[in-house]
Image (tube, rainbow, N blue to C red; front, side, top):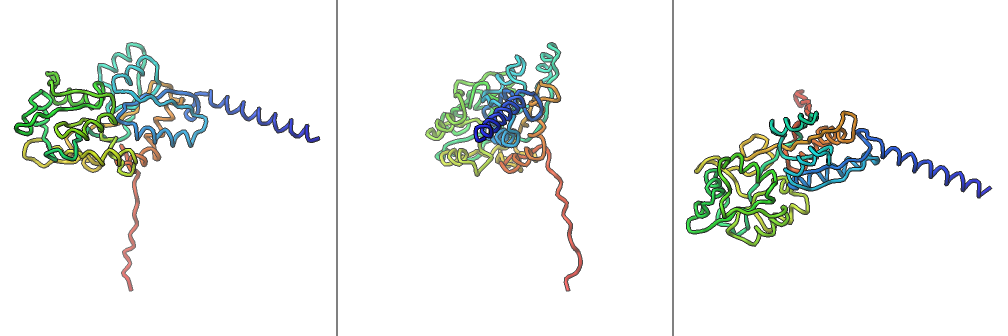
Length: 305
């Protein structure tokens, strides 16, 4: 009798495992398998978003691929990834390249973001202007602090931050000899913290969540520069409110871009991050979400007796 009961339990276990395995294979908004490539600057936020998604939907098998903006778009184009996260929508030229393969990517803007400039605690200043940045990017390394040669250090040569500064500030010129790029943001922070004559360029998403342990460690050894649009104007820090109001000069947007079908895991990820839970996570982690839920407050105006 005991052996029969044990056999029934074992058979049920195998059957359940088989069902779970079948569910994991089905490509639906809450199950299946997908590679998600993302710009390394978004690491903290994407990791948290996907951790929460997978905790809610156990049949979703999502492999995260930390990369750079260029490689993310190439992965989407080459079908190495069905969904990517970068800090901008695709350009018209990129869209035409996808359309030439009969692919029309879908994009959801999910949060605001910005380029941040970090320096060591011993750096001589706490603000910088766009005109001063332009001169440094061109190679005029002593234009910012007279008599001091300042280096610009990027998080990655193909990151969204590097590309945006080039396209928006010096579109017709190359970077000066005082500009160099590393491999990732943690490496950048280590270099900047020990160099009082260097300015690091990274994604603010690494620094927005002041409760995150990684962010806390970074901010022990570096500080963030406030940026002004012109010389002798008010400089703004890249924080949640200044990004939302666009007072900070170098804002950007986090986009989820997919090439998968509407009823797919890629669509499920996009919907989750753009939805109520995903948006609330951005808000709590220091970035302005693309949309905020309305809060209805009822005030009782009855006079107190």
